[in-house]
Structures are given as C-alpha cells and as structure tokens.
Length: 169
Image 1 (cartoon, rainbow, N blue to C red):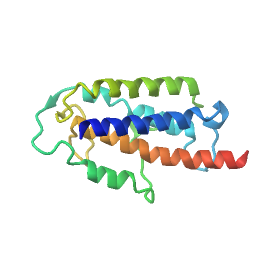
Image 2 (spheres, one colour; image 1 turned 120 degrees about the vertical axis):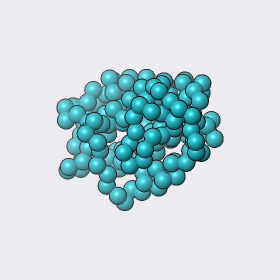
Image 3 (cartoon, rainbow, N blue to C red; image 1 turned 45 degrees about the vertical axis):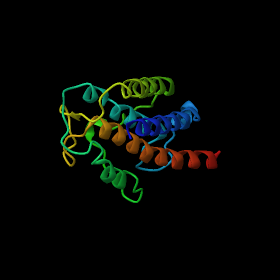
Image 4 (cartoon, rainbow, N blue to C red; image 1 turned 90 degrees about the vertical axis):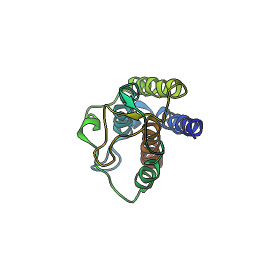
C-alpha cells in the first residue's frame, strides 16, 4: 500500500511539473478565467501546500486505526470537480506574477524530499504537529495521499487553463 501510494504521488507530481514546464513565462501568468487563478498561481498554491515536510518529520505517535482510513473520504471530496473549494489563507497564492524557474525549482525540491524520505519513514505513524480541522490528525500516509489527491484536483484545473490558452493562440 505504502509503495503504491508513493508511486502514484511520484506520477501525479511529475505530471504537474510537466504541465507547468509546457507553459511559457507569459502563459504561466495569463489570466484566462475571470476570478480564477492563473496556472502560476495554481502552482504557487501547491508549492505552499507542499510544506507538509515539516509535519512529516515532526512529532508522531502510534496509530490506532488503519493508516489509510481517511483517504477514501479525501478522494471523494477532492476528485469531485463539480464542487468549488475555498483555499485556506495560509496557502493562497500570491497576486504577483510567478517566476516559472523559481516555482519549478521549489516544487521539484519539495517533491523530491517526499520521494526520498517517504521510502524510509514509517508512514503508518500519526502526525501530531498539524491537523486539518475537519479531519483531525493524519498519518504520514494520509498526508502524502492528501497531497496526491490535492495535486490531482489542481492538475484538472491546470488542464482547463492550458486548453483555453492553447485554443486562444
């Protein structure tokens, strides 16, 4: 289970990077839908949400439930593209133009950290340093799954942005 989730995480995050790399600097910051994020802002939001490494390497405790118990509920919510979600303030993207190179570098480093450390950490442990109020504490496995599903949701968003950009040119 753990290795499969890490493989999916790697595949999903590589797709994210591929989509962002496919855009020019101008396309990355092009506002294609009114009152929606640009591709760059979507990447910036994910970059901020990937700061979970501090939670993964923080204080943990033994888990008294299946370590993947909350993933089904998270998947049902995040992969329902018919609902609009509000981002917590802490991970809202900047309103300034996004530098493509810097964004990709930050994302690559954070993704690589999870890829490297996810293989050596006990992913069944419950993280104690941060929790999402609606869900309570996540295991390390659930945090990686959360980031994977969150990324999949935003890949869908990026694909819509890119489709619109490519149809305009």
